[in-house]
Picture (cartoon, rainbow, N blue to C red):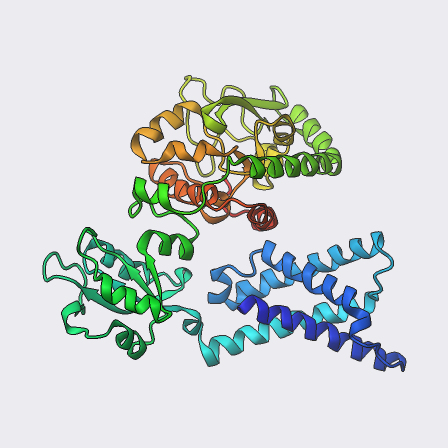
Length: 448
């Protein structure tokens, strides 16, 4: 909803720019209908750039300084993007002066909107009010998770079904509730979440059915947390949930064909555009450190098949001289001077375009791991092998949402995001991930 509000602000900013510029040169502004292509292009480009540069991350709502910094960069990038579009499509009539005015107005208007919403309404107004059914360990996890502003919900009330194994304070006994519908109306409940430790025969089916038929949304904890957090919560899912829930169609023939066609077209274009960077990087790697330009390493791909991933070499030769696989560390001393830059800017990943063209990888997917790490992690983490149902990717949902990890616990958290991607795969999600990868490159999130 907030994104739609800011799209409206972009539209109004462009209209204000048209009026101001028309008055300056003494002409009447043309009708809105005649300017629909320019309006659509401007709003679409600026919104996508803002999305890609992380303007809609939760941290930008908490800190106006971060919001202003990222918004400023987004507006500069938008000017460049619009200029490129106008160069290739001169029939789109958007004057440079109007673009500059509109971008300037949009920057200040969006910041003003965020200040007003923060001060007058408060970001809490956009959070769901949840009724939790269950006061055991799962119910307690729902209560604890509500403290994270990024998840976007608050607890309206928590219902206990028995007086045993209570892990939540301030609960209401189900026996005290005559009508769950009236209870939800009184507490302004948006959604009911079932969070029972033991579900067999324990759920108040009649009351829940009454609430559902009255139009109140009823969800199970695993599905609710997946939707709110953008990850599959390993602690709440079961094999039955994986089997019966929607999704996990990443290897379905039509989806696979569409994804492959997109990868071939996108990798061909990107290879052409990035060829100067590829050549320059190859020269720098070769002249600044001893060893080969490219680094080949065995990784696990789709359905467990192995392949050799290509990267520009960013570490010294024999970085694993003892023959043992090692996680990369923060400020790793094995990284060369040039290597530190190309890792931070993700340039070292560009040779993987050839892996995409060859079909070993996709642009978007779980990051491929080394066989030795996969074997170890599969023993420690449940459902780890399920991430291999799709092709690995150069970028992915986990890379956008979790910083670089170098431990089993980090791998567990990243798997939750990988499973979300596998479950919810679509071409639209791939495009969103590619757009937001710009944020990772520009702000160097999660770089080691």
